[in-house]
Length: 324
View 1 (tube, helix red, strand yellow):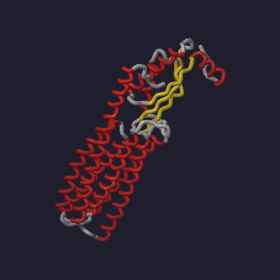
View 2: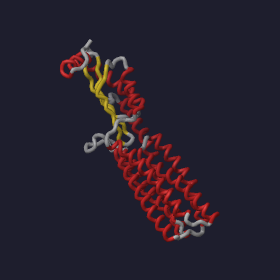
View 3: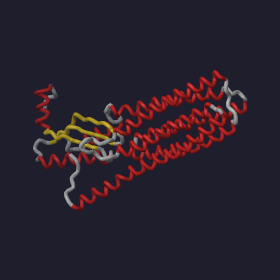
View 4: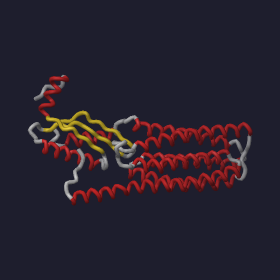
């Protein structure tokens, strides 16, 4: 149905709401920009430390941070594209840009994991041990602290703005935190024990953690691209709203999907046959508002049908229950 702008005052209110809606967009872009700066710095530091120490686990973390950096750029551009309003070429908006971003990031993670395994096995067979382990330990300690702070910020903004791209970027960094801790422990043990084989073995363990994170992210990003319905708890909430409205005598053909942070909901609602067109329209608008209050920004389309006429039609044509 959609909301109407019937006066100067209501149009002004709509304009204010639109300006307010731009705040989450700015927050998403700022968070993505912070991730780019952080990952750029950590990639350079880890790369320099990896070369200086000869540690394949530190180098693997440099590659991991490089994929995080590329993922951050993807997230940065995708959130800007995804929040563009619908246009003639994209009447349902651009929200799926965030899901495509998440899928691309998952692919990058899996490629990075494969490279880490290759380098680790090579070093293990060549028995090439690292040196200057103290430098590697210092760099990985800094990496853990920085990524915890940035990942926490990204996760918070992702929750507040319901951004798939930022959530994917945050998951990258949380994975980086876990792998950095693993590398830090491995380097510390190698330093105390003198067993150089620990370095490539830890790198292989890091690779499996990275690959698992990439696989989970791929599944998360792929589902909306196949127009899967909203999560069960959200779907049940929409059903509850429709069923609790006294004006809605019944409903069917409820369909939901999600593109980026945008939810799409459509359903057929059955109203009293004797309502005028204007009354039916206003009732549908009221129901839409209830759903939109629960899920701000959702695109909702409700098709109005006369209750007695529709139940009679279902009974006669489709074998539905006999009307009372």
